[in-house]
Length: 138
Image (tube, rainbow, N blue to C red; front, top):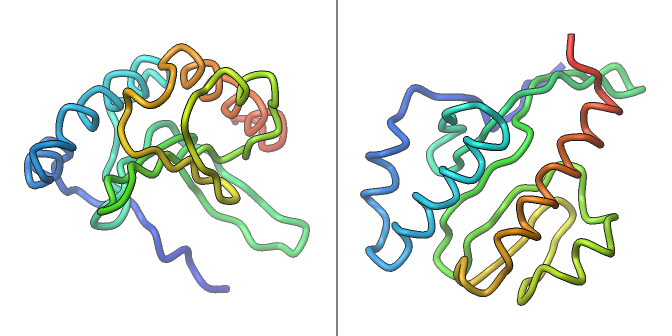
């Protein structure tokens, strides 16, 4: 069975963030603070451009299994992409979040000041809870 394309690396998170455009760096460092505090994890680079926090092991009904991060982000050209692995089923949280767009598990924001940090923290807690219910930690 094929492995995930996105795997943990030993790249430095600090160096990666410092390599980003200056206008993105403060948001990235703030996201590291928020996600580290919530997950009690200092973060890991996943592939060349994603910073992930926490860890869970999944196993699908198909038999495919692997490991992934609970929450993460990537500074992209157009947006900060925040990975919320449980998706966006918490409409009461989403209504408080602010200005954003979503994909399946991706929250797209232009800049961190466009959203409520309190609502983001609530969303991260919600997502981790849902992931841990579906794939209980060992």
